[in-house]
Image (cartoon, rainbow, N blue to C red; front, side):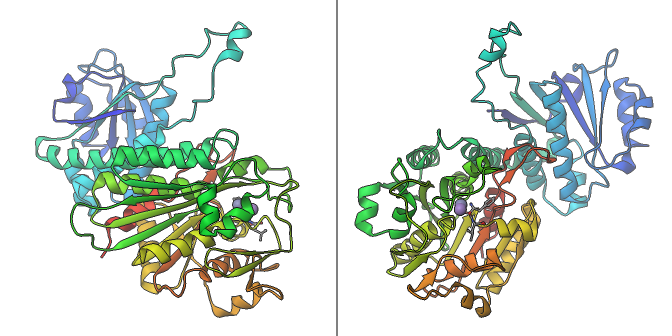
Length: 508
Ligand code: BES
Ligand code: MN
Ligand code: ZN
């Protein structure tokens, strides 16, 4: 964990491995020159800096008045878009980790001016910067023992992992209070996002349904939420036919976990968050092709996002009653596995013809949605799921699909996406699509044939919300996991946490 503090001490007095000085492009000729001269730094360096958001330059500060060996100049563009601040913060995190920096000072002496420029508050800018630096500093290295190098005589075994231990945010006296509060929120949010990434990055052999329940318990303990875990016998007693059918081929029992956050004051509303927790999706008897199947360890990213969101919401003390529902299992083939053509009875009583066992997410979500509505009567319900490859075909890897039966709610989620940087794009759930999931033998079919794969999946889920007027389904198949070769770090992204926290905070 990185220790984050806000200080008004002078830059000259702060000792660190790296001093980060962000500058807007237009400041490079005046303010930056002045700052450089004050500290006895070589102003020539500024000529190599263009000030574009995220562009950076390392300057060595030997002979200067600073107690830091190097300075990182980072561009902020024209310092008017929060997207630019986010970009810069990522670039800071990446530079800090490639320079193996343990202590970092971030010069935010101009934060009040940046706030005016962007129309944000000092607090929210400080939150955003801290969140983005901590998010950008994440790495998943707990499964690296270093032993292989040792045997070959390279190095001394696992190197003490160099990570960012301390982040000091330097602001002027007038901004200390707000910046400190913002930084505190930034830490909560980044930790929750990174928790979701850890869960996604854990492979199928190290994270099964019971481990998901344990992760929820651990998170609840940290944030003071209530938690309840249904085991296989209880799930059978409840009659969750969808979750049980998907679990049939598995050697690990399913779990159904409820995470319940209640605020101290009378809640403004009750919101249900349902997260798909398929710990590994082989496709079942409708087996997936081998290529890329390993990525299906990320098929519980919806569950991870729900756990992270509730942890953050609780620690932030949001005035809402928020309940998370997490059906979890892996989806495996085997002699006992469910078969294409099987007809199952879900928790709601609705029968489903399972045309394809690889359309398993919707089967477990059907049970969880129906359970949430029946027992909690929420004012709004949102499910998050890595539900369809078709959604990636439609929207790619950085944007999630949004499906909702409520225009206003959809708008609010869309806006939260724009604000948080975790963007969603709405797709229709028109009646026309119902035709595609009709079954000859059961109430509904679990696949919709060739076209509109992500929409028919949403239409399937809609059958289980019992006419609720404020429902949204977010298909995070694309943005929840980044594959090798992409621009961002490979692995879980924690997508959904920032989006939902933003949405819940803006609740009206
Ligand atoms: N977990 C997958 C969807 C997925 C695919 C997520 C790629 C992330 C990356 C889901 O369970 C699935 O297999 N969906 C099928 C549905 C089809 C059988 C109707 C799909 O998308 O192919
Ligand atoms: Mn599947
Ligand atoms: Zn799946």
